[in-house]
Image (cartoon, rainbow, N blue to C red):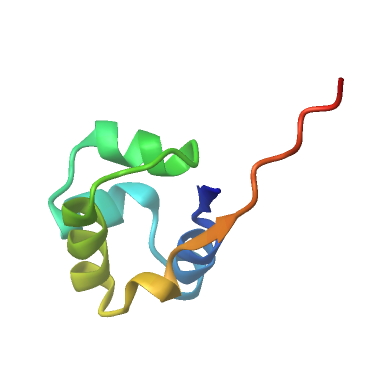
Length: 72
């Protein structure tokens, strides 16, 4: 399973926010924003800061999707 942050990007659009606005509001590093943008895992601390800044729950910004199966 891998994380999908599509809900987060949709929420930012709905709130008329840019990634840099979220980064500043949540007080997270650009490295963490880059990881989110690439669909990489981040710590629960980062997710908590994002949820606090957006006044939402983790389920509002994150889904888990199955890894693509490797064909041989």
